[in-house]
Length: 413
Image (cartoon, rainbow, N blue to C red; front, side, top):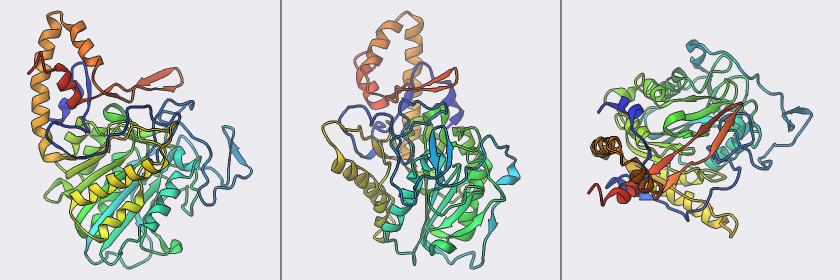
């Protein structure tokens, strides 16, 4: 499958949390707008007032240790000195130095890696710290589970995490011993070298029978990829950069991830699924913007009971749904689209889409553009928001592939 086809689709960008015949588990909420101006723990990218891409904010967080102090910027008070913006990056900056001894560890059942780009979600709201507290509350059995969090990309951390360098945190250890590796200064989390360095550190030092990886931060869909590093001009990992990173890991030859998950907005797209199909078995992500608090990481407790990726995905999705059901009101009714997709089915869906697109292209050339666009307008859409960066505006126009096919089915059976 030629994944570079991703970048030459015709007139529609596809988001496919409901892939034909390949959606395994899903949570669909009422079709209302996501929380206004909210950020998920992964960065809900609603319409924003910030000058940075994906940089919307909500009211101040009550995360532990988030007391405001004298340091202030952009009208916001911070409790610690802020790391420098607009830094430069070289690939050697991503090199991780091991701290202390005891590595590599003995093989365990599961290693879960969390690539946590803190960004403004942590520096302004403490969202990353809150989610690490949820991970602690999951009560994982660390005799058989490794949980590793890679931190960076934020101008300050509410919790006890340095902002002047990137760190690998072993969540099984006491707080004062938790940093097991770090970079010499800040490394750009929007660079392929940084991602591959983290993954390779984990597989080299925390071997396991099963692996999963979760990406935590903002999401920009197939066009803008994932992540927004606050220290490197909001740089993100584009899809091809994520592929380049994974090709430098053990998962490029033989080994496979049980699952890859995006606790981020708009990452439930066919383009991204096609990218990850060579590296992972299952894909967990949201078609729509994620609401306020992102995933519920206490759901990781399922790892104490099973290593079945479908049961793990089911628990993560059910925990996500249950949390928002518990806080849903008449005025806060987010659209939930977190789903798990079997990546072995993606190739067939991609081929079917190519065949459909070829016929659509012919019909557009024959003057049926207006009629097709009317059908397109009836399909369920996601992320129709504008994010401004200076004088440049970015638009997301994502459509549910299953619903689009239904709208077109009369003319394209």
